[in-house]
Length: 159
Image (cartoon, rainbow, N blue to C red; front, side, top):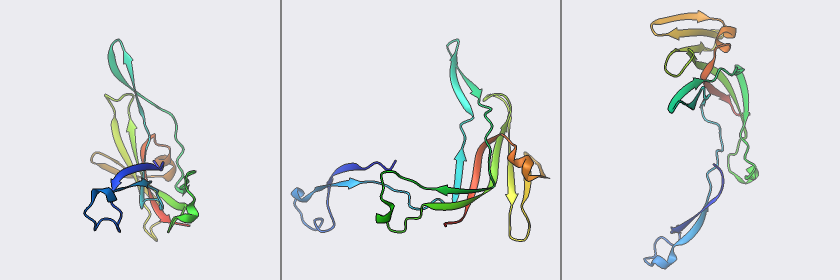
């Protein structure tokens, strides 16, 4: 993602006022993430595709994923000297506030449910499970034990 590439045929700011095509230059281009996103979504690949008797079959991956409510994330790029990038902040602290889980044995069958935390100031950390029309309170341990398909984190601060 952060690997540098060379782009040809660009006009620099000082050359763009000139009419001649001969002023076009090449430039090195690289994108760098300098801050973690406000909302971090992590998608866990829960389904594998395989061939069986000439057909493509989806198979569920039941690997256990341990989630933590608070997570400190470091943005690292071995190709970047962070000191040269304005506003670089390598660390961001996140709090888990949502989980989507798939209940079922295969890609062709099952049910999606979600767990959502209400962590408003003063309300405590309450978790709810939503399944179709049913919403009910659950413990944090119950929510964290779900077979996570997608996890949603909100950025708390950047340390």
